[in-house]
Length: 374
Image 1 (cartoon, rainbow, N blue to C red):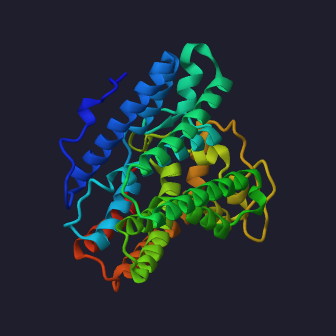
Image 2 (cartoon, one colour; image 1 turned 135 degrees about the horizontal axis):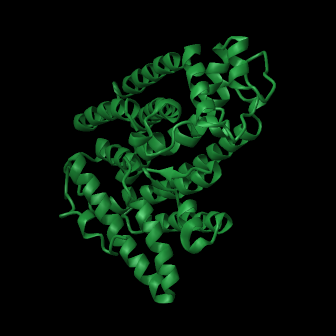
């Protein structure tokens, strides 16, 4: 296990002004490592078991990932503040978003019963295998890991020099993420009531809101400057690109390479998650294809929804369903939807009075975030 200070991940110095992508991520990683080292020491002083618990949380936070949320927040701030504004006072706020993200991932993995995340065992699997404690212990410990990360996010945010409106935006982001997650869980429980439109509603709240839209507006709030026009542009860009991000995730969940995504292929098919991809495939499917997609459940002839796949699907079953989805033409349709949303997002920035380097960075991010292999 890595040492408490994780020297290899620490930044060489906080960039005082405009940051390159690499220096920004290094600074975020270093801020997290420093903060987490202090938290581990505090819990270690109470009981060594708590120190080990906190080290597991730290390893999950620092295990990698795209760091998209703090990056979008940074460019949301930079688009208004400009490249002369010092980064250090607001850096803890950006890093706090990564702790919030870890909270969401850990709980999401528990709900989805996922085995891996970022190519490593998920939190509940780590704890279940520890000293042979079993699945119930693993689930309980993972829930507490997620809770701890959410508390840590609040603590780290409090270290930033943040205007009052920042907390309002942060709280809204958290509520929307939880609301979207509940709708996601509800969809798995009631697949017969779901549709493409309902799946997109989940995408807007579970993913678009807390991945892109609200982080951008969070960054704007950190600037302390009122820019209604930029706020509106960020909102439109964030929803469009955020939906496209989730649609790409839907495709990767079925057709992605586990060696690249770090997650098992077909998890969404195994759980019967009613993603936009699956809902669209059902809508486009022939009767025979619908039966292949939902052999265990009834199909709603109005929109093709319905059925709940068995959790005991074999790899061959999952591969067959993926093939049927491809044959319906749903993946190609989803690709077109991604392109449309990226174009809409870029267009939303066109007339906004942003600093040009931020506009260019957000255009590039719109493409990178939605055309990715993992």
